[in-house]
Structure formats: structure tokens, C-alpha cells
Amino acid sequence: MPFSSINDRMQFSTEKYQKVNLIATDRSMLDIYCLLPGQKQDLHAHQGNDKYYVVWRGEAEVTIGNETRRLEPGDVAVAGPGEPHAIANPAQRPLVVLVFQAPNPF
Image (cartoon, rainbow, N blue to C red; front, side, top):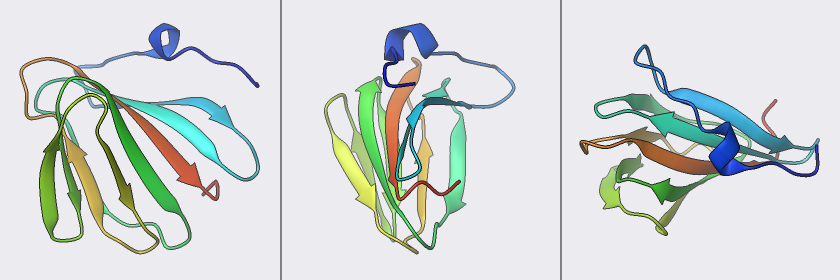
């Protein structure tokens, strides 16, 4: 699928944050993470790829290694291979984040 729409693919659930694949190739993938207030993805690491977070809507609390920062729309962060990372929605409105990974971990 060479084309996709962020606005058309956003979806939220009160059960847990939603991870929606927008576009993928054998070499990379682009997802959106949709988090309601209070939702998070726990600290974890990937051994063989870089993971970029780009805040699209809302505010994110992103942890990379030992550092945690609050990011707003237009802000970007990257976790390198083996670097622990996590994301949370500390705000009172929905959060949408573009998440790019290369190489594609799947």
C-alpha cells in the first residue's frame, strides 16, 4: 500500500492504546499510536532497529534511556537499537504519534 491517511486511520479504545500500521515495506514501517488520556506503552527495547516518535496531536511523555521529556506536536525523538523507550499520554486529550521504525522489525 503506497498511500495512507493518518486522519482516516486514527482509532482509539478505552481498553488500551491502539497501534495502527499506515505503511510498511521489507525495510521500514510507519505506524500511528493512538492513546487516550492516561494510556501508555511500557518501557521496552528493540535490538535491531531505530524507532522514531513524531507527535502529531496532543502531548506525549517520551522516555528514552534515562531521560523523559514532554513533547508537543511537531516534536521528534528517536530510540536507537537496544535503547529502552516508552511513551505515555499525560494530558487530558487524545494523543496521536507517528512511529517510524527501520529496519522493519517484523
